[in-house]
Image 1 (tube, one colour):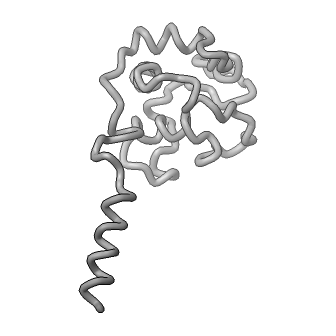
Image 2 (image 1 turned 180 degrees about the vertical axis):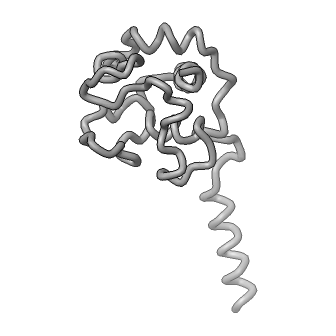
Length: 129
C-alpha cells in the first residue's frame, strides 16, 4: 500500500512540475542598458511610461526617484539576493516591496505587458543609475 502511495505521489509531482525550462528572473536574457534607457521614457504594450512616476534626478514624484538606484535600492530590506532580482520583483510584482514613504500605486501589469527582454533591459539600465 505504501509503495502504491509513493508511486502515485511521484507521478503527481512529475505531472505537476514545470517543463524544466526556467521562468521568471532566472530566464531573463542579457539586458541592454541603452535599450532600457529608451524604454524608461517610452510606452510599450499600453503600459505606463516609467518616467511618469519615477525620476532619475532626485526630484520628488509619485514613486521613488531612481537617482543613485544601484546604491540606494532597499535590496537588503527586501531580502533578495541581488539588485537585479530586487528590480525584477519590483517590476513584475510591485506590491511585493513598497519603499518607505510611498503607496502601492504602481501599475501592476508590467510583468504581462513587457517582454522578458524589455524587463532585462530596464534592469540593466536601472543598475547603471
